[in-house]
Length: 255
Image: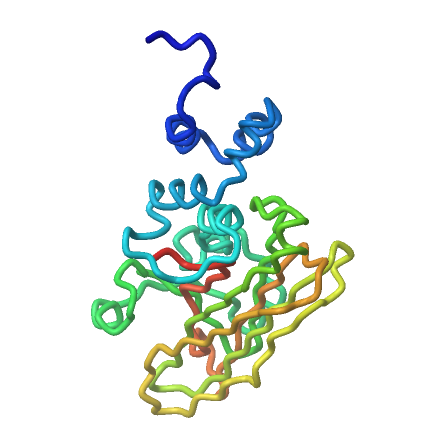
């Protein structure tokens, strides 16, 4: 039997059609067409189907989700918000705030270092010198797709990670500071652990530092990330802490 109006289709068929449409188009255009489409687009079933189709959840997913629509958007946006975290593009995207000694440098992970590092995709790192070296990035959340209402109402977890290592032949001091900033760049949350001092003749293993911002105040529009350090023996060259594989992610990770 021919269908003269798309709304004559069974609701389950309409839901299946909506599953294949871009999420923003569903909310900004399709939802405004009529009350039927609005009600269908607001159904939990639709957003759960879209999550399953996109691989954001598995068939046996059993974790509670407060809002499947928000969950879908957070999953779709989930990625590392820091650009060039592993020095593949030199110092592109980084601001060299303090560039002391022989200045920042990019080096390759040796074959043995690659075996030790937990991520085999990481091939390079940034290294500091005998006077303090600090570099930073500012993440513009709106530019990255996180609109104001999403950040202020949902306030999803913001996870920060960094990796650092000393050289075995020289002591060093590593430091990190991450701030959540308002539209006026006023700090709304800060993570600044005590500097990590690594003694000479240490194991030189890569160490991870991480922090999750939760229940922060509304108004977060930017994230400022700064790290670096200095060698503690003031040797010419690049004997300070090495850093790489830094990340800032928002919301639940992929399964």
